[in-house]
Each structure stands twice: as structure tokens, then as C-alpha cells.
Length: 139
Image 1 (cartoon, rainbow, N blue to C red):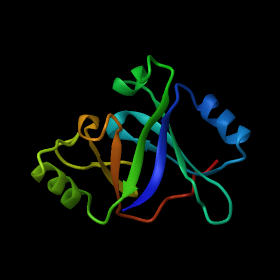
Image 2: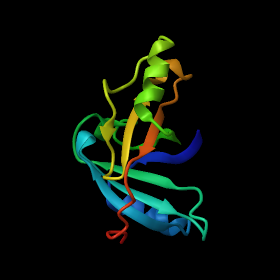
Image 3: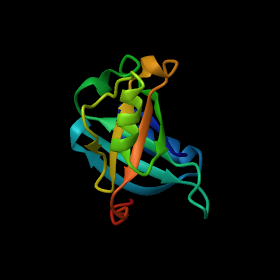
């Protein structure tokens, strides 16, 4: 596994754009996650596209209440070859995943989350890339 990104929930797109500007990040691509009713902005930094941050802007549901509605660091994501196989492995060890099966993130990834009670209170996301990233809407 390697780190894929750090997810940060924010109440508004304007707050995400402020942080992107403040830290000199660039927008890599934008997307929408139907399962969680949230817009996403993935960033990049430098020519190697290192240190991606995923800004998550929820429109409804549990994420709108994250950190009493103020947002904050939501999760750390690891890239895996097969999200279902990794999820099964964790379940076989007596742990639980957030979703019964992996869900579509943006159009290029499938995801699932290890419930934080099994990982010292930290939410970890497993990410499997299933298609090329659509960077056509990166502004």
C-alpha cells in the first residue's frame, strides 16, 4: 500500500479554494461522489503531483455534520490493487468496513473505509483505481 491522499471536509467550495490558494496548490481534478452527496477537489503540488489533498464539500448527510459542521481532516487514504480483497482480509480478521461493498468514489476509483474503532480512531480509506482520471474539469 502507498498513501493515495488525505481527505479534508470543508463546508464550502470557497473555503477549499482559499486553502488551495494559501498553500500554492493546484487543482488536479474535480468530481462528485453520489454515495456521499459531495463535491471533491483533488489537488496536486509540484511537477511530481505529490502530496495530494482531497477537499470534500458535502451537500447533505452525515458529512455536513463532520466536526460540528466546521469540517476538518476526515481520513487518510491508501491505494490498493483490489479494494474488495483488502476489505475481505480485514473482515476475516474480525474488523468491519463502513460499506458492505466498495462504492464508486469519483469515476476513476472504488473505495471503502475501515471503521475507525479498529484503527485507533482514525478513518482509513482503501482506494482502487479502476479508470483513468478525468482531468477535463480541473478548474
